[in-house]
Length: 458
Image (tube, helix red, strand yellow):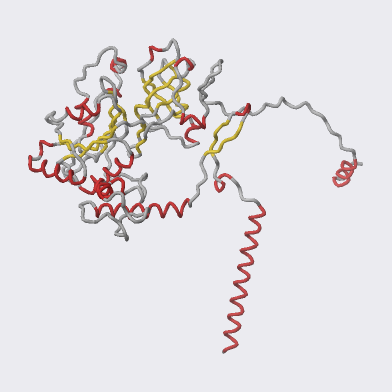
């Protein structure tokens, strides 16, 4: 007679439980995140640990394996970057000066280590035949510019035009404040001098001298006024910034035109490869309707110059972000305020946190031309800092955390956001449901007693 299901279950429960020792698959120990560069067989005084990578110089070529190289990020567009090789492993020196089309390692994106044009990088998984690779590491930076995003900049050229489009004092002030905040030497240049008369040039020269600047005036169309600028830019990495339509790409093409490139020059290889990166920049026209420039240049690129140095062509923009400028550092970006403070040394302002709004004991007066622009930017920065304080607070947790792996090697990994990657426990969910039910019951009771009192009064 077959057992009923309940009887069979009871009989199975009464039997002694047997512990079967099955053969388990071999356990694989979790491997730590591989360092960004394979260490050579001999002990190296130059470790390539990920947390310290942004603060270390490039390694010597003899420590590089054949599948790796170091180079300069010359252009960035979409998810691809063009890297110019400056060092390779022994036996691969003939690849120096060639360009590689690279992607960025996903780990660098996760820990928010941004790769900028002008960075010195370590390229891995190099395919020398197809000239492709992957950026695995970023080396130390000398300087950095936010607008546009370029690293290792030696000099800035703030370029405006005297006409088509005409310079606006407010826009010009924002560009000058952004340039002052970087701490990088810069020069103010005015293009299209052929479109105006000498009286207009003298007017702007005197006006900018009262601001504390000594600009250069040139004409790209007539190829005049380049000598002083070429002496400043020789052998340096220079970024040209300014609004759209002022002639940034035209100026760069003029500075690179008719270059006598010798065969010993490293960029001669790019010319032999017919690299698009080496060619002239595309130039657009000024809009006839608005009188302003069109967005012809759409990405940042470093262009080589014969004899050493690079010129960076950047997209035009009319409103620099001023993200690195605070309400305390804004006054330092105006030469007029610096001049007033220096004239009143050693007294200066009565309070150390003075923002020069006419406070008691302030030595900065409001009788200079750009003071309204200073007040406007100060209000803008105050609003931005207030929003940031409400959003992030005074303390913000980092996006990266470090863990110690095998042999005490520290590795970096992205820190997950609690609200995004962790589920709420069932206890908290049930408690929140009970709280909502209790609140609804309290509301019903309040409504009931309110109606009862109203009927009793009637």
